[in-house]
Image 1 (cartoon, rainbow, N blue to C red):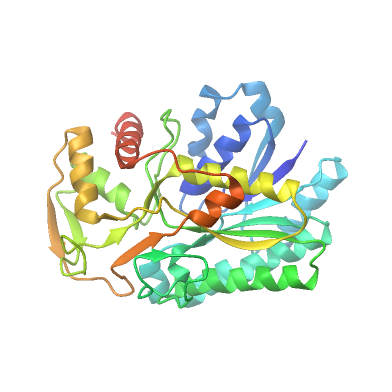
Image 2 (cartoon, rainbow, N blue to C red):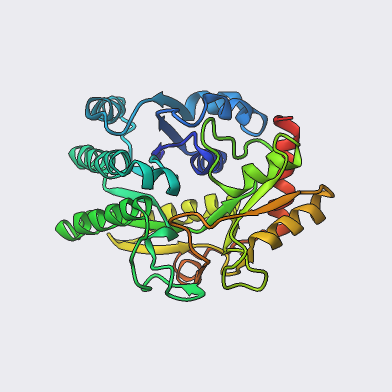
Length: 346
């Protein structure tokens, strides 16, 4: 049976990938520092997966990807037990655009050096399949409405720079051993929502940098008003336009990517993971209000440093290569996100 290491597996994206892979009966090891997440995220897994299966197929390890000894111990232990780690889904890393501008050194240390440690240990144990959680922030934001994989790369913040550097590092690793390494970089656009069954959702312990947790804090009256950063962008209503994708569709793209790597010869590729449709911040708020019958008071603030107007994916390559299609719409995202939040947080 395939044994998959998911770094950052307790985070928003990582936990949804973990849940979906476990549902398919595969073995998963989650490595997470729990700096901005909690082990509690896994408490409800037993509602949809038999406890005996979880005990057999699921392991949680607390640690940092910069800890070479820990990484080595994880791979060595599994190899000795004849269940060697066969693939890595690499989600671990710092992800706040704004914080990366304030403290770029920490982002390069965790995101870049941490990945180099991971790949080095992987190679030592002949584990040469990796799916990397990259980001649309690697692109030049002035490239146009639809960004495709060959659009110009020019990150405008340190977070995006670290993602691109890791992509290039993995490309160089693949080129050095073209007959061995299988690498896919999945460039996320804007995942929102929650598991449709309400098992897990987005619940950062510290910083709330993503749009949806902030909207739900306003919906639950934890915050008085939502702040829209700028109303003078080049869009129909002056607010930023993003490609919002349901977290469940995003998780499914990783499973399809894993299947692709398992069934094909060594390869390196970059793939956009988005819906191909743009939605403004104001349109998202209105859809949330309409779907959940809840008012979201908002104010306009100044543009944020490092932000830009329109980011929408050309997702045709991912759909073709992975035979993957995002199935859920904006209403599903708003409904599932609020369903999870209102039943678990309030």
